[in-house]
Image (cartoon, rainbow, N blue to C red; front, side, top):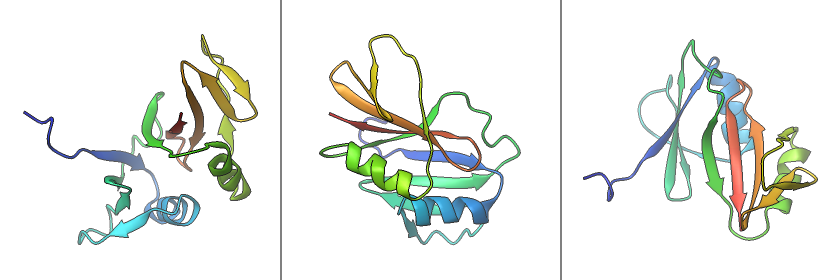
Length: 125
């Protein structure tokens, strides 16, 4: 039923202005006009990310959104780090860490948080 429909990552934040600075300035997402300043929508490749204000922002203990990165993951990690992004390090079965990138199961992954503590991920092959 929904297999042919597009999905939108929906991320709760406490402060829309801080979120805009992070998602536009740090991550480089392009705003999509949606007529709702209190819930900015962003284009990210063929996907979209909706950011909205909520008192429950940052309470999710799991990954909220993942970006599949074409090519080498390390330059993207390096660029984000240069913009002040700190990466999370996890001890997970079957994964080893090379700097901020976790490697295993045929993929490379790096996790980081937005200003509200939402966990975001990068995945490459």
